[in-house]
Length: 260
Image 1: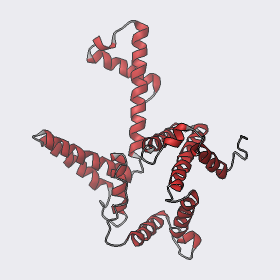
Image 2: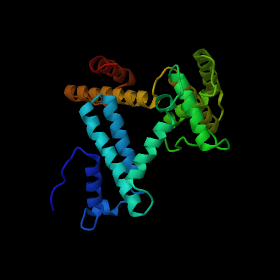
Image 3: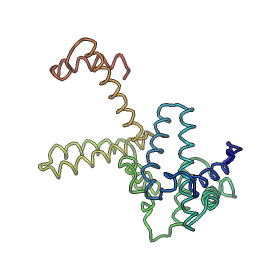
Image 4: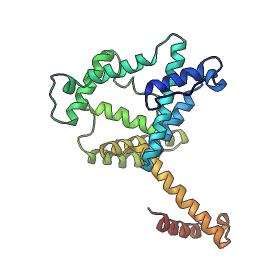
């Protein structure tokens, strides 16, 4: 069987995936379903995010290809079941982009990004109908921090938001006080959730992607702690047997060596 040609074309990817799913194709690909591929899709999304965080354009190119493969594979599975084809997927997003950008493909005029976002939410409301919540389309399986920022962003579009960031910071101080006063584990968990929710609001207002910020903080911690472990190995020291003050001294050394 001849090797696929025109490897820079999307149609070639579609043909490759169809061949993998066909009789005599790949046993793994033939076995997959929409449900079995859920974790794969999520993993590919996170790997693409990681390459974005790293600023690695070469890796990003590769990861976007992996995401595109997931689109082609799900579309092929759907086509085999008579649900839809990849052309329907492409047609759907093209129509949506044209419909939601009347300031580009129509006669609507906008003055800034805020007006674009307001019009976007208005168009989405018309599409979903007035009896469905504007929050209903936010995927519930999103990471909790991202979900928090997204639902807050949406309600802010219709004015349900603090007038300025000072009000949110005052709210944060209030939530800290309530957390300190919590008298049960259940109450502490609730108040801690409110704390995170308020922090998500502050991050959104400052243009900070809370998930990305936390991933970066996690990575900084990882680099610093592994540096501490390396120093201890070089010095013949057991990190676990050091006092907290001694560990903290190593931590400060690590911060100077690896940044932050």
